[in-house]
Length: 216
Image (cartoon, rainbow, N blue to C red; front, side, top):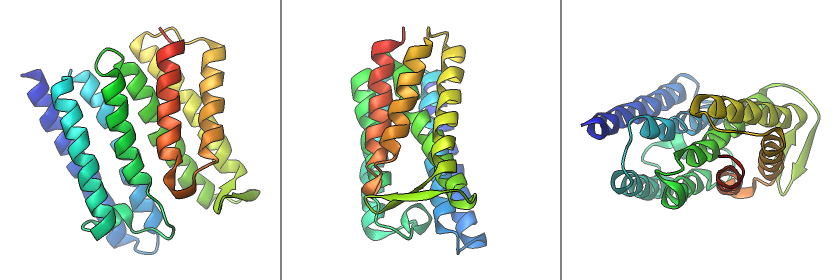
């Protein structure tokens, strides 16, 4: 019964996230990246919700796989432009779905904390880094055709740190300082290599695997 309630709650949450992105696109049509980041950040809450509601593996994995397929179709045909229509070539949303599906396959539900760590660092850290880095003036550089900034990189590091500390406190995990610093450094470094949305794959997978090995 709890898993059914959780599944409904998660579906309602995603409907609200998509609706918010579509509304944002209509109200601010010139800020195409903003609506996409709403989906990027909002999707991150799905894994903690699934953990809270004890969604079983047999439900979580197929749902994640189906969403990944739908995301791929939307990338190709733009059924919901607010999710994909940005001013650069990116497969980030597809990579995001593949990553969540892979983390579920590897760790759910015995290490739901590792799945949450990887997804939340990507959703909040990278999502806010992209938003703040674009809107706050600071020194910038270009790596593999992607513009990065001092403020954006600092945001990634700070938010990732807060996510990991907060997750450890909430779950009761024993997160050591070296482990936290190592994961933050890894996530921040990999976020620099974001050509084509590659960081949506490399960052959460790396953080999730490291968390599973270093945190008990």
